[in-house]
Length: 403
Ligand SMILES: [Zn+2]
Image 1 (cartoon, rainbow, N blue to C red):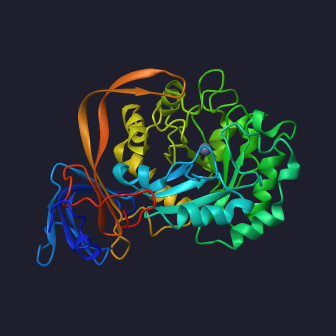
Image 2: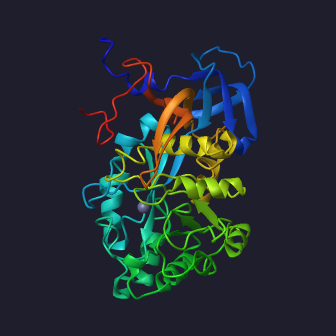
Image 3: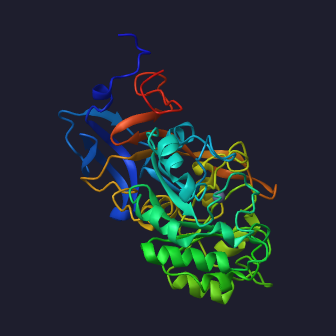
């Protein structure tokens, strides 16, 4: 067989022993060197000194091993929005095994999302349905300028009819997106989500009122995305402390998500917040066509920024695995618990001098960078940085074996 021939499915799903990596899995309260065995696409054991018999051994000494990453906020409705990226183009090489579209689609485009995006993707795909029927065709579309674009009943019916795919309701609450409608869009999003028993994700930044006024409408498990934006009505008061009502909302169980994006993450805001112990619950990219070549690039770059800003590695892993998977009600993902699908992200923590840039053009040179070495999806190696052929299966636009 030609060495460059992709491995067949059965060969690629050979039972593996991942040996000697530092496994960080907050869902298992695990942060130590140990082995993982994978059988039939699932984690079969995780312990020190597991026997190799019957398994192909992969030496991961000196590497970190995380559960496959979950990006809670991205835009992947390629083909029918201007902002959508192709999941299988961006995920395998970055350790991301589950990606969540944050409101690019809504009830009229639900079927397009399923057929064009979710079904052809090898990467696991979920979505939040926009409370506006318009969805997000372009980044600047004011989809909530008129409340005629909101139909709570149809939104509820659509999400309820697609429980395998749709995991929440999205609302963009920016002033330039909602016109004269104040915070009524968020109230309507909560009304829909309440009927469905799913979370609401609220885009903030230049909101019509202070953040606390929006958080007052939210329930535990709802999500504020763009939490560290640098625009008016952010998390910081005039003394660069966290607003008391924001702390109270967070303590009540509202999740704070990074949602980096092209305009929604400021180093200085995150630094001030981190110094006061106000860290994100979820770290997501808000990746879309305009920011994938910078300033966001990918989830590991976003995680590296958090690391250099002082967030602990274990908390960063929790914020990209168990918390986002729980937020969308998929607790079998974002974990290496035996019996669950073997989604695994192997990382190298590089030391050197690395350049980073935020959404406001502020630049920093920092000493740490997380780089993805290998990604397994359901026990299958879908990316291997150090092997051009044997362990790497081509990842195509449509995620099939066809060329
Ligand atoms: Zn977004």
